[in-house]
Length: 281
Image 1 (spheres, one colour):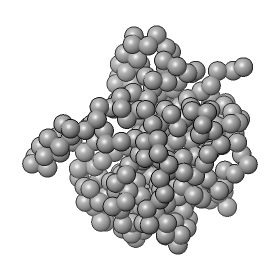
Image 2: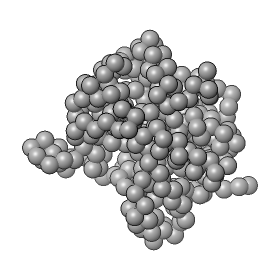
Image 3: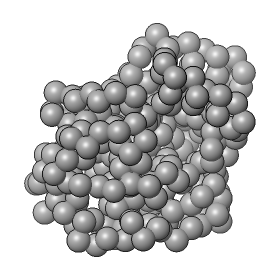
Image 4: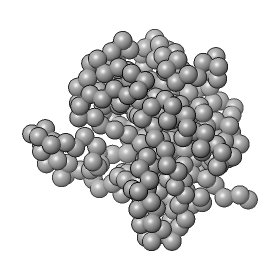
């Protein structure tokens, strides 16, 4: 039996690092995606030293449509079958940044990039059959209020609001992604890993100082790896799809994520922005 392949985006730091390290201890071939080669190499060496496990490094960026496509192409070329895709890479922007596509960075990294990878990597995921997609989300999605004329472009930017909006976008497309994957052998679920102390949202100034003080009481990154790894590997969740988990507890979606008209419009916009019209008719 061929060893399973686990792809983890944003795997060189924070929760992603702990996910990679946990999988390296107990599973098959683990692929760490890092946008910074030097940091990725350092993380790769540290994980090997700690676990004795082998970790592949793929250098790739999910900050734009083109770079996300390049990453998908790299992964497809190197790994014909992917058994688990964990979309962990995420940002919490402290100021508005618009990328080369005219998209606000949180919307791109937290929503559109995983949306793209989930579809672009389908040939490898279907080849693994069964395969699992795990999107790392955040409970703050409940505070989101998405305006499709503004949110994707940062026209309603606010530090907390924009982060929540980007996570809500992911949740809004969950049901349709799961529906389209029915019968493919690929499942997709989302998980809030807990309130975890990472570098997300850190900055200088008063707001940064306050956030760092608040974070002192948050759980360490290794605690944040528990639920994503469980969802990626546990036999008891095999076959489950289209679900949202708060750590290991299945949770109903908040009302804000059940707006079917908004979800349909967001789906259409995401397909267009990602250039996936020919794939997702």
